[in-house]
Length: 116
Length: 114
Image 1 (cartoon, rainbow over the protein chains, first blue to last red):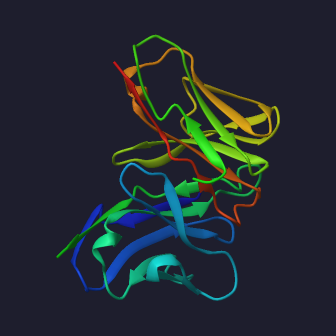
Image 2 (cartoon, helix red, strand yellow):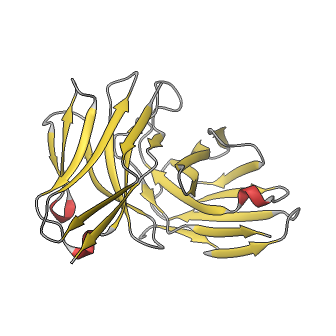
């Protein structure tokens, strides 16, 4: 069955520090993996995605994620946090095979705070 | 978000009343989804549509129904609203049934049932 686990519901970093948000998944089909960001009172915006090919994926706003099949992980990183990165981040995996394959299954989210 | 709008943005309703939320897209995407977002639960799929008049249930479909009579509109109806349906509801669209492109999300509808 497909599932997503995000470790840490809240993460706090200082401005300029490394951002690391963890995501582990389980999937019965080759995974398509996504990171979304949600700013307060807004919808979700796609940060980056992995479908096939290169396992290090670069996204918007300086974020990147690496697909590690052996670890079933897709952690999100950014070398230097900015105040504007404060938001909630969601990891997602596509659904199981069959009619619901295109449906995304989301983790519970990680709220990132950035301290000045 | 460009190409997808949800209405209303905010609604307060009384327990037991019917409520309909609307999702409208101008992208001509085949697939449309309704999710609810609750603290500690992330986003959970309510219903989805894979074409006009073609819909299916998600993991939290009890108490909800949907309709899609046109490609551009996907309606979510709470037949008799309950307090447990107080939530933020998001519509999403995709032009792939494999999930390869991910979704584009609307801005959400905040529903309060009192």
